[in-house]
Amino acid sequence: MQFQLIKSPQTLPNSHYRIRSLFSDDLDTLFRLLAQPSLHRFLPGYVCQPKRYNAYFSMLAIQNDQLAEKSVNGVPHCSWVILPPENTPNGACPVGVCTAVPPDFVVGVLEIGFFLDERHRGKKVTEEVLNWMIDTQLRATLIHKLSAETMSTNHASQRVLESIGMQLEVHQQDYYQIGKQYADKLTYGCLLRR
Image (cartoon, rainbow, N blue to C red; front, side):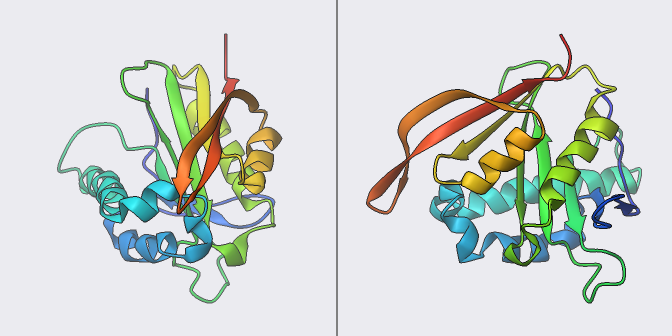
């Protein structure tokens, strides 16, 4: 498996949003994005354990920092920040993130995750980022399958996953507890190669 460390933002052709690897300088902005109440209804794990989420993203960013400084050898983590178009106010600040990480003890499979600031949703940015990730970062690797989990109440994420060719594979009832209510977990998947 070999992923590219992307130090300078690459512009996506359709939306003109930009993407690059996640670094420590991005963490404060990322943590502010994660703290948005509009995300909490779809990230029950963050609401219950925000320090765990923050530690996870910190670990990914620090390893990418070390690789960028060439202080360690290794493969960059599959974690990218989404930046707005170049001539946008605050254009250097991340507005979202996309990750692809292997599930425990499973070879050849990556679980993808993503979120985007609510002010940037509805523009097909997430779909373009995920297609970029698949085409430029994953197709040349030994990854044969992508997986993603979402809540049954997160219709926008379901549409995004279906738009990139993923199909519903598993439906688990009453999986997530949010306050006094429960939501189902949906697991999507697609094969990159057979």
